[in-house]
Every structure is written in structure tokens, then in C-alpha cells.
Length: 469
Image (cartoon, rainbow, N blue to C red; front, side, top):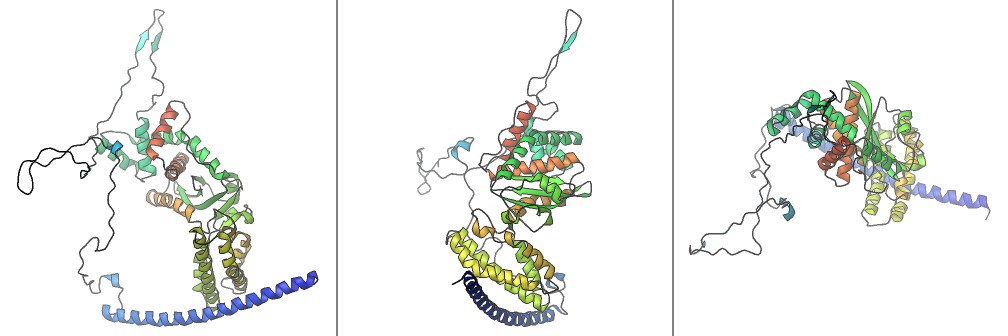
């Protein structure tokens, strides 16, 4: 058989396989259309009955319908609910113990000797001590020499130049960056709970100190992320004095690093990233500089896009529903491989027909005006759609980066961003430290306090990254 004949036979086999897939797909579409029609009739019937019950079709939460009938169940956990018991602290963390013995027998009332139980019932009460600020006053004496020159004593090495010690600075930083408490609320909390009265300006200066203290560790985390074989990136908006800026995150299993740009352009991101390893992201054009063969496009975004297709005109809807069916099959196979039920190679083989069909459907979608541009754009990323089936450690979605951004988005909504470049630097540095410490199982406040103490004393901060890339 010549090379041409072999290639022709291979193509004919592929066409037959695709025809079989299309036939199955058409059957699925017919079945789904019938199901949608049935559900549509049921929804219309339920809406009609709801309108009759509520008198004119008012929505159930409008306050004009009938109140909800009581279920008869008591508030709280229901029978059969698995409770979550409070964990006891370990013996090394118990401050003190008190031995409790019974005085008399609960049966006959006779006196009982104090006899230690090998397995006593434990009850722990956690309390915080009454706070009293630890204030150190340094008295710098001026001494005049016989020559007439007066010399003043110096502060001991490692003494902060401001009024706030490292642990207090770390607390203020975490209240702002982790708990999203405004400066005025921080000021009030320190006064009411700790008995410490600090001016708003001093709080701002403490944020600058915390930022400087973790500058090197954040840089270390960025280098670790850039060297990682797989990383996730995502972006959102940020505000500086009510002006739009771009906020981006780069996340791996071990570290998370944030940054802001005046605009999240391809040039700005290209300077921040180094195009090494596999990048999991959405289809944003800003990341177009990254090689498609070393990218993974987020399938969570694709599922939402396919669902949007399914809500368009009939032709687009048919393609959208078929894409959803095959995409869910692919993700199901990947989850089976991730959970150890099948190998990744088996998952890739199981997904091969669906993979061919998805790309065929996207090519068909380029002929449908309402979704043509979107389908074409997805096909431009075809080399980045299936990396997760071939490479270990690559996930099909960018949920990791989106989860890391979530707390930052909440902070932005509560505070409307920052008011200066110094505020931006504080936000991205502290969030990077907080998220990375959590990933590495480190105590955030202890690390931040140690880093600030080292900075004040002129030493290097403790290593932040303890994992290999």
C-alpha cells in the first residue's frame, strides 16, 4: 500500500468514526429537545399555578403572597445530622489544669476519697488574658564632656523608630489586609480592646513598615512561582483613588503572589512573567505572549460560554447543548483520573472521540452568526485546550487562581481600593504573605512579626518559601 493509499484509508476511517459520533450526537439532541419541551410545559404550568396561589402572579418573595407554612421542625440541626465537635487543644498548649473530684457518692451519698481517674472527662475553657499594653520607655540621657561637647545616648539596636513594636505592627497589618477592617475601625479596636491609642497617621506608617519588611520574601515567592512547572494566573480590576488599575495573581501549589498594573496589558504582564512552564488561565488576550503549547485554557469558562450558546437561537442552541454534553464527559473522565480510578492515559483515550467532536462542533459554530466569533476564538486556542489530559499536575480549570483572587475582590468592594502607590504596595505584599503562609501551613502573625522584627534590626527576613518549585 502506498503512502497516499494509507493516508486515504486513515482519513476514510476518521470520517466513518466522525459520522458515527455525529449520528449519536443527533440522537442526543433530539432526546434533549424533547426533554426541554416537557420541562418548558411543566415550568409554564407551575408559573400559572403559582400566579393563581399568589393572586396575580406576584413573586413569592414580594411580601404579598401567603406566608410560608411552618415545617414543624425545630430550629437547628435535624435528626441524623452529623455534628462537628470542638477539637481539644493539645496538652502542651494547656496553660493550667484544675483537678475536679466528687465529694459524695451520687448513689448513697457517702463520702468519697480523692482517687485519680486514669481517663478523666476533659472540659477545656479558652479565655484571653486581660490586656495591659507593654510599654517600654527609653530614656536617652545627654552627657556633657569635659571638652564641652554634649553627647546623647542612642537607642539599643533593634528598637523601632516609631511607637509601635513589631507584633503590634503585624496585628494592624493583618486587621487591614486579612480582616478588611478600615483604619478608623482598627484605631477604635486598639483603643477599646488593647488600651492602645494610636493616631491614623501612625497606622499608615506601620503599613509602610510592614510592606518594607516583607519586600524580599514576596520577591522570593515570585521567583518560586515563576520557576514552577505549572502555575495559574488571573486578573481583575483594582482602584487607586477611584481610578481603574489591573490586579493580577500568580499562584502555584506552594505560593501566591499579587501585583497591580496601571493596565493589564500584554506588555505589562510580559515584564512580570517570564514565559516558563505551563500556564493555566482564561482566554484573555493579555496572555497571548505565552506559547499555546504550554498553556491550559480554563474549562470552567468554556462551560459558561457553551451554556450561553445553548440560550441563543435554535442553531446555536443545538451546538451549545452538544458542546456541554461532551465537555462534561471530558471533565468527568479527568476527575476519575485525578481521583485514581483510572490512569491519565486511559482518560485521554476515553476522551478522544469527545475531543474530536468538540472541535468539529466548534468548527460548525463558525458558520452560525451569533456564535461564530466566539467559536473561532476558542479554536485559535486549540493547542491549549487539552494540556491537562497529557501533563501531570495540570488542572482543566483556573479555579485555583480565581479562589486566590476572591478575598482581594471582597476587600476592593468594601474599601474601594487604595488611595496611593504605597497603599497598592501594602495590599499586594500583605495578601501575598497571607495566602502563601496559609498554603505552607505557617502561622501568619508569627511569620509577619518575625519579618518586621528582622527588618527593624537590620537583618534578613525569615525564609518564606520552604518548598521546591
